[in-house]
Amino acid sequence: MRKMMEDARRRCRDDLWREALRKLCALDGIDLADPLHRSFYETLGAYEQALTEKNGRTTRASRTRQKIRNKGIVGCLADWALAPAPTEGFGMLIRTGRAELTGEYLLLRYPDRFSDKAVAAARGRLERAGINAPSPATVRPGV
Image (cartoon, rainbow, N blue to C red; front, side):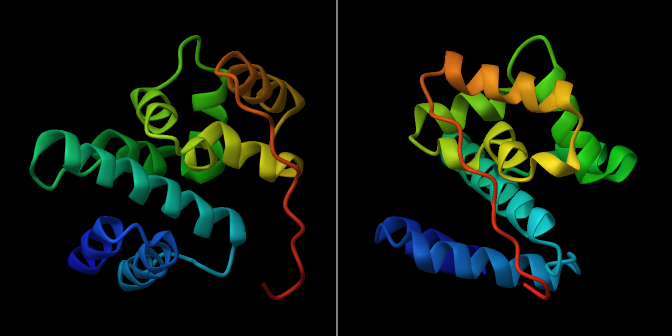
């Protein structure tokens, strides 16, 4: 799947890249039934791909994965938003034009899953980076 992702990225086919990522997550046993989880793993995949390209070798976001195990996805996203400084991944994704794949952007797509304080912090961080906040996701039952 990672090879498919690389090929899709090389051909500038984000649609194929996202599909390959979804399949990779499914192989890892990720709960893709929850749209927040599905979107989070797309975000994580984008960050790991950016790390891989930066380092010239496959690089996993080990600390992020550890945080997910310890706090869960909602806790991880809230912690990132509430941190005094943006994460390395936030900066990297903003610089590469992938603001929609940042944790802060994702948090604002599902504001009902987070505290008001985390939502305000995420909104502020994106605004300071010159990014317009997204509209909340419309989630249909069973999607």
